[in-house]
Length: 170
Image (cartoon, rainbow, N blue to C red; front, side):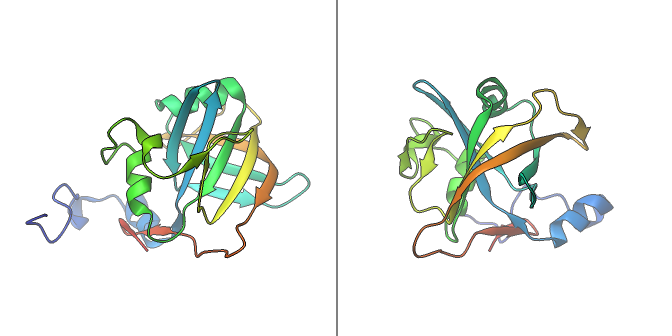
C-alpha cells in the first residue's frame, strides 16, 4: 500500500531535461534480455531498442555497461530477447533491479532454458540474438549494442506487448 498518488522519487517535470521529456512521450517496448553460461543466468530489462529489418535483421539497444547481464552477454555472445506481454510490468521492475525477488530474478515468472538464454513462458515474442561487437561505442549514458537476429518466435495467441510511456506501463 502507498500513501502517494505518484512515484515518491519522481523528478518534478520542470527539473527534467528536454531529451528525457521527449523520450517519455514516445512509447517504448518492454523486454528482458537474458543470457546463460552453464548454470549461471543473468537478465536485464531493456526498453531502449530498435529492430532494423534487413538481411540479416539486427536489433540495436542502449545497454547499461555496469549490469551483470552485459558482462555475460559480452562473454557468451548470445541472448534471448523476451518481449513482455501487457500486465507484466512487475517482472520488468524485478529485472531492472527496482523491485525485490527473493532468491533472484529468475524466481519471478516461469523460465525455460533455451540455447540463446532463458526464455519467459508466456512472453509476447522471443528472439535469439548474436552480439556483433564486444566493445561498442557509447550513445548517451548507455552502450549502443548491435546484435544479429538469429530467430524469432511468437506464441499462438499473440498477446499484446507491454509498452512504457511517461514512466508508466501500458
